[in-house]
Length: 397
Image 1: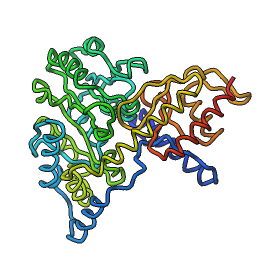
Image 2: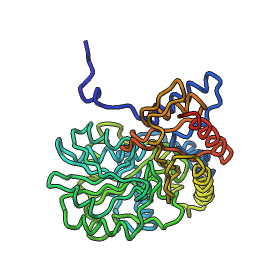
Image 3: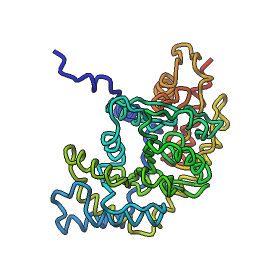
Image 4: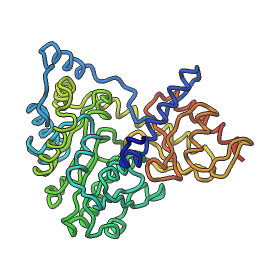
């Protein structure tokens, strides 16, 4: 007897989490695995944030929290949006959740009906398409490549919009490519959106504080789009708080209220301790973020330099996040005498088993000719990882 729903049977496992599981299994067998598959800062949470959490425990913040979050947290997020992004979201328009991923699916569940189209610039966040399909929406992708820095053009956007389009969902800076839209580029896309008021814009800005060459610009700060833009963010990446599971969104009031209704039936309010820690982080001057940002930029430059010497890989120069997304299709169809590489997943498994470096296949992000390398690890590990990758690829003929 099969008790599983058709919905869950259609759902695929997250490739990033699947690769993490394989890494753990190999490490348990004694292998020296370098994990470049997970999007997780390798820095500890800043001490002042940890101190705020400890203080909240001593002050007995151990009870259920309001579903959208503590009032003080919502006010801090509102002030952060205005201070850093020129976004005006009142506390009533903000919902704190168990990670930015929950914030995204809350919005999808609150707005997308069966058959509604959701536009995703590809490559896209690993869970975006599954969230839409889980909610019976239709995924519409706009293809990009390394030559365009993985950015769509206004013409591509306009061509993708139809009367059935409900939402445009993207991350900026991008996971998996690290690319970041500049203010002029977002304003150009905004001119297209102005023609189509039926399209809701969802901007996932979780990598906001990990930017290198351009100043971050939020599309929701364009006045004509403010009333139909949802801005998602969180504590995981910028503050190295992945395990604290605290994300948030700012949205039009009716959407925020709908997200509260949905979340109240799923998880209720986010962790009390995480919320108190987040308040301290959001009210800070972000001095703790700067050293991490500088370290990631140095690592990016190192990885680009090293990967530039790896034959038959094609890369861009990402402006944010901590990923490099090389095009590797040259190696498809090649073999080392035993293993035949059919696609990106085969290539990642080959490299993992041959030289114990974990990467993520690009097909998980809607870009099958690519693989993702995370440089959220030490410069020594990055250097050793590329040495191993190059050695494995040289065996493919």
